[in-house]
Image (cartoon, rainbow, N blue to C red; front, side, top):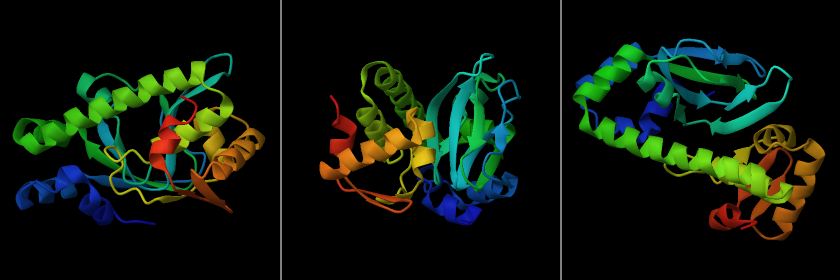
Length: 224
């Protein structure tokens, strides 16, 4: 698995921090490992930390009392999330689950707010992060209501390569059809068919457990 130092070196918001600030941030972060299927945070838990995915893949979702689930986002390695919950100072409004064995960084709320008070570059990063996340969630609602399954799979896959939210994303991602199905709201069988369609369209290349994106813009526009 990747280390915390690997992630911090690749995170855009750390690059403009003075060495003293970065040392303070590094010392404050706690790292925890989660098995596949484990809950990282639950709806109603206090939002006491900003979270980053050092390694692995997680999903942000909500489950109704009747058992119906909606997925808001998938967060691959390199992504930070929960800034909205920390800023509001209110409990999490969603569950976060590890789709595979994952390593998570927890930056305490106090350190997060100290960065807000002392770092202009961090504030710029956070504004862009919030704007990108808002666009992602608006797109998710649109995709869920208007797009056919092939397009939902395309958009769910493209979302994992957002250059602002996940700047160190590799063109290849190790992801199973089941994991992608959780993110797209589709069965594994339906995802399999969609991947074949997207592959024939020249947008991706599919190997066992591995997807290579050949045309990110095409994936983002697919089904429009």
